[in-house]
Length: 491
Image 1 (cartoon, one colour):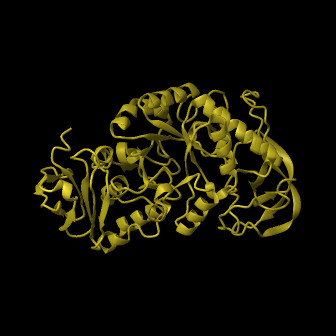
Image 2 (spheres, rainbow, N blue to C red):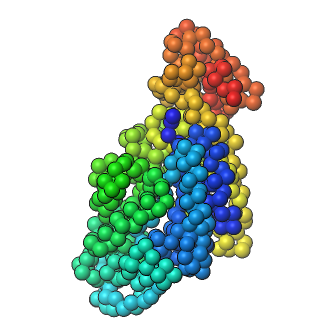
Image 3 (cartoon, rainbow, N blue to C red):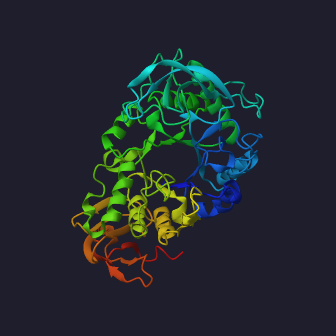
């Protein structure tokens, strides 16, 4: 079966609705739609308790078990509810991908007086002033956990940098030697530092603690793989070593996808090469192509939609997506794909041969929220994408076989999938961003004489393939048409 990932959360999911219990309730629905992997959000305690989605990491070992940061549960529920949720997803024959954030920590328990030197915000390689000592929250003792699972204390020797009242400081400990860690990303000169207390991966004690935690986390929860956050801020050598340790420990492959948030294709390819293909990357350039296409309307040339994308250059390692929690409205990285184009974009990630698609929660279930920062902020209402369930079912059952592309028109592009063993598998797809029209495409001679219909049409018209398996397929203006062989969609 085709691999399909589902991102089961969005940034503003209400804590009161308990995501872990909600995911149990929806597990069967996702399985029925052909989902194979469920990506769950960070499960450990945030520095902001239940008020933040888990990316402001406090205690990696607290999965909603200890009274810390004003709460026992996390934003999404308790540790037991999390484990129960994973078990239910496994019962439905799907795998679980855990979102982990190992770049930084926030919400330290104690202050320390530490030696630092300030750097410029826009060029972290450029130091300003002289070495000095400041008082900063850099000591994590986790008193609520009281050394259960680990007695490791994170202090200023465990971190590379910290943000203070006057800006960003490079910590001068025996591991930094007065320099940021070597990362691939050169934005701001060196983008090692992102936020909070930046973890120092050159400290051997830190590396051992993170290995210990990874082993504990997999054994405790039973998760199957990972989604890795903030890759461009972490030494490129860390995750290959860490993943190799876990794969050797558990004697199995561990599915791993990572976020390197940059639209430059060459950078993403260099990261893939540097990590020997161990980590599949989200196709950020493709997302931005979708965003441009949606905003451009009929002025956008659809023939260029896959230009400079991972799915075109390295399809076996590309995770394709339309939107995610960072691109949704009210986020700092907002780049929301306009609703009219979402069926087009989802057809392009779900029904093509290349890449592994990741479906976003709001596209299937919708959302309604405000960010809470401003009482005057209007509420955001995001309706589900009406065509999505049908597209997911077509991927589950019919989007197989050889792909033939028909990218010969700026405003109508199409492709066919010839099908697999099922004589009625296969599909033909047309994408239109201008006036409607038609395109002659071939399903292959094995389908000659068969009838096809548009599954996205309320009153589907039919066409009959000629003796070469060719047909004249149509699409309405600004719409998507997905054609299936008759008798193939009667469920």
